[in-house]
Length: 286
Image (cartoon, rainbow, N blue to C red):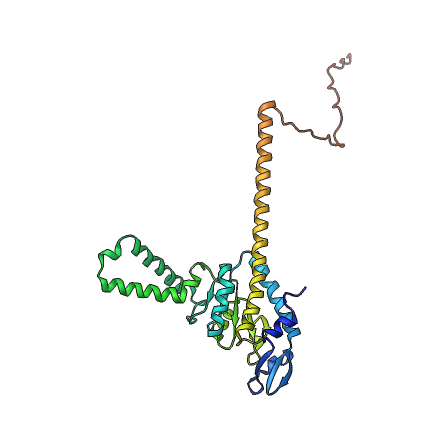
């Protein structure tokens, strides 16, 4: 069963592309028609591609991998925060800092700097410095929080990135490609779908269209996280049962001296070993 339906996508305006003169020829397979100088996206293909992307991201989430969401355009910021923040996945809605992926070690140093400033505020260091220095450090902390606060718990490179508008976020796509990180994206008629691994043809300018697709993706990721939690609970329960069984076996062994279990005799074993010869043969007379 599809995760979205034609009417929902239609109502959200996912089918509206860009002006015909701004189109990218590589998007031709996903264009249904041209009307009043505007390309109309084939929503049947949008449904198929959205399902493919959602299924792949669900499996990543189920295996414990992190997916980074990138959307710095104004109409997409709030949609990303609303859909992705509850999942505890990293996201970038401010300016994409060059080297976010390819120079990840430096980004981690900047994130650690935030922790260091927080520690200074609690261990009394701020009391021993001037008010001007304290104000300057606090401003640096606010700037770091604005740009990197949403990826503060990202300790290693993400397993994939999801981008809204690959034309605007071309630097993020280029860095991910360089590191062989799978890329997912909403691709409008003015972009090249070949630049990403999973392209979802849809309107990447309308807030309703972006929100609908992000919510669909977020729901799939949530399913993956839930299934992961269920599997971990089952493993923990099985391990607990195994430990209880081992403890019970040890207890029975201590009380009876022998384990309270019966073993079946192997059919290949002999039922009774032959008696050893005890009589000596008489020596022959010379």
